[in-house]
Length: 552
Image (cartoon, rainbow, N blue to C red; front, side, top):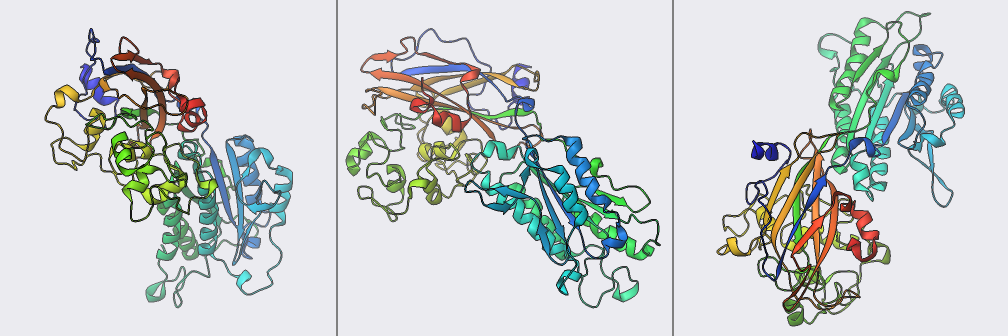
């Protein structure tokens, strides 16, 4: 039963050295330590989960008849008022006909304005209501007298895409962000139908209900979820809200409402029909923030100063052993010997692109940071094939920087592969701290790290908790780096958590950094036991801001 519980609450865990923890051993080898502790997934209620609303409203000439009182404008105000103005809610409003106009703005640091999602706390609802009631000026061109769904959808996609890119500096927050589009129209996008067909017609000249070109534009919006957003959905609404004139013929209503329904299906949203005398009410759509229960996907302990398999010292933790650096002529106490912004390990891996000992151009000062906290500089990510705003580009449960350091590919999900064909999958080699590129498991029982994990059972208060223990973590005698002195070993504990209902989505990471020391036969801690408390696990960006990278 214990093993069954561990399997249930550890998404993606494999079987190698993954058992219910045994009692701690009486002693450890003089050059190894054991790392144990507890980890609890994040409480979904404690996480800020932004909701980004984008209203795309038809203001073509026909809407003067379909919604003469502009009740759609009050429906927008009602939604914002009901949700409440908070830092977690942002709003964009797009008015379209044959052209597109964005009426919400974002203030840049230099004071200039750009189109975008306005934080609801900065919205003047009275001014917004007035702007929506006034609408657009009378059309002056033939193009403005048409209705263009594709143009509106393209502009909506651009707004979301721009917002996603601007928020990739905080991938955890982006992964909890929910983008909801509400697209309202009274019907026929005259600019988008194939020539020669009749919307709502019958016989051979009838237009198709679902237009492939419009569905393709909707799918482009939905696919922005792949850029790191937690959720992107498009809802649609058909409106005819004028009791003083006859409604459109049933065939026209069927064509217009059917097209909007098709769009909602493609956008994984909902469709509403406000043509039967009911008022326009957007409150029926789902505006819930993304609050998901998280489960542990992978837990990995890695000594960044001992090379996998050989445990040779890597004093600066750059992915090259000290012996390799002496042979190459680089400095084993500096991650970037020539100071050009590209680390020694990357330059050694791509000798056709870099000079290890001569400064290479290309890494601007603003790109020498690590915006996602994955231990790769932003300019290095270009050559690694990884994303600058995502700690785990291939979503496999191991941060990009650790994959580069330990020998797997951060740009493609290769952890279930067996690159060296030694019978041990890459992920199991990372857990064992062996080399995934060399068949080095002959004496696995003696040299491999042994990971054991036990779930506390069903989540309590929205959090799933686990006890872990990793034995036989090898230490190396390192050179003095910065102010750490010789013998320091920096050990990373990486916990990747994923929503229980979306285990293949981008993980949410929490990291803990701990330290051990080895000088000859003297080891710290003397008993070889390192314990990690749940509160020591922090978001990657916070780890980077702490002195010495969060190492106590």
